Structures are given as C-alpha cells and as structure tokens.
Image (cartoon, rainbow, N blue to C red; front, side, top):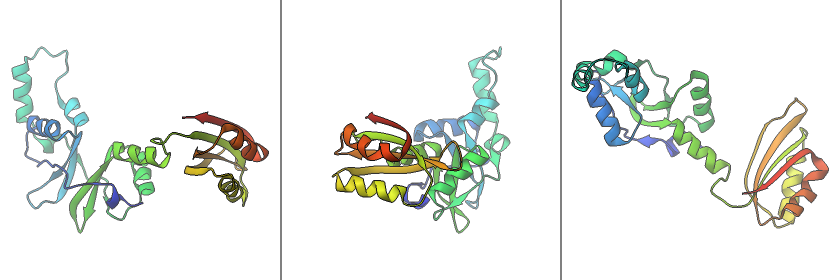
Length: 213
C-alpha cells in the first residue's frame, strides 16, 4: 500500500504571515491538528501544529487578561513558531516507510509532495486507522498470538491447515520474538472455534494466546 491511497488530498494550509490566532481558528474550522505552511509561490516552508501554538501561548498562570492574550497571539505570526524544513514524502512512499519516518523523527504528520508542490498530508491518526484495518479490528472472530520457531514452511503449513479446516484468515502479521530463533505470529480468524485453532497451533507453538473478539 502506498501513501497516495490513504493521504488527505488538498489539505488546509497556512501562510508564513498568518497570525497564530487565525491559524488556530482555521485548525478548529477544518478539524485538523496541524497545517502545512506555504509561501507566496505555494512552496512548502514549514508545518505548524496545535502543540506549537500551545507552547507559544502565555502560561495559564499568566496575569494577562484574555483580551491581552488574544491580542498577543494576533500579533505573533506562523513563521515565528512553525517547524521549518519538514520531513516530506511522495505519493509513491509506502505505508511502512511513512511509519518508519514518523517514528524515527518523532513526527505527527508527513506532508506529501509531487513535483515540488504539496499534494496531500498523512497523520499518525491516518496510520493508526490503517493499522486497525490490517489487524482486522473491525471484524468479529478469534484473535491468536503464537510464538513459533522461525523457520521456512511454518506459516505456509498453518495457512494450509486453516484453509482445509474452513477457517478464514482475516489478517496476519509477524513481529520479532524474544530471540532470533523465534517469531510471534498474529492471526485474526473467522469461522473457527478455539478448539480447532488450538489443535492446529499447539503442535508448533512455544506459547499461545487465543481470544474471542
């Protein structure tokens, strides 16, 4: 899956000279938590987030009145507090690469660029939604987590047994086990009973967790 399939197209944006109060109002109106910042040539120059605005605002313990606080925020510009030189991706970037970039750079969003211009944006919440789909969270069934030996043929053999038993695999994934010799397999299954699943997995599993969800 690539970002073009899941990005938000034509996102709301800010300009460098927009006031912080106007940027905040735009975020609320658009129901977003961040805005890419474009210059007069529509080139991406930064990103501003609700967190940036919160950090720039006077402390709640301030003796300033609400009017004074709003006045100060109206004078402060987006360019004064935005994050510059943001990490970007392209429409062809894979979901896995987008997640890696977010994690490694502690980012909440990634602007999507095409031929030097902004064409979309993807956020952490977008990627969480994809993760839920990949895990089959919207489907009822049996969730299985099995620690197995990391060797060729284990997954293929289990898949064949599930199929021959009339069990449908809604989702499947692998993560690293506690050591290099093992992997953790996760399944979301339907048309299966716990007894069936245990009979198939127990012979090849070091440990097994089965839950109806």
